[in-house]
Image (cartoon, rainbow, N blue to C red; front, side, top):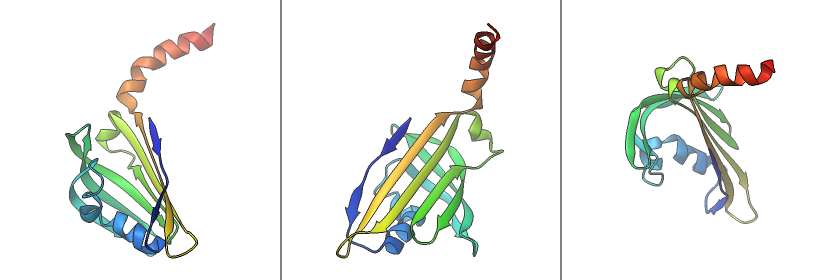
Amino acid sequence: MEATGTTLIEAEPRAVLEWILDLERYRQADPKVGPVKEPVRLDEEGLGRVRYRGRLVGVPTPVDTQDVHLERWHRLTLTGAPGVWTRWFVDFEGTFECERHPGHASRALPVQAATPGLAHGSSARPMAGRDHAR
């Protein structure tokens, strides 16, 4: 499942991406983000992690860990951290690309994708194997 969209925001790309990185503030605009358990802390290369509880159709989800990669100041990616038990149920990747638009606005392109995790795929693998064997 993937969702994309484009919007113009009256701010510089850096301000937009800093706002998204502050998930406590960002969650006021995005109902899929629930309480933040561990805020984003980036190293000098723009890599870090965040832990938060999401919302799926308004229902709280378990606390999840996301790897964060900031390509200063034009792209931000959050990816479901490997080895975390929640990968058994859902994998997630969210990307936000920002570029300066004529004037004082930034064009922001968020792309969010959620795919079934290992628990969903494991039941389908034997069937897929049979199809390939024919």
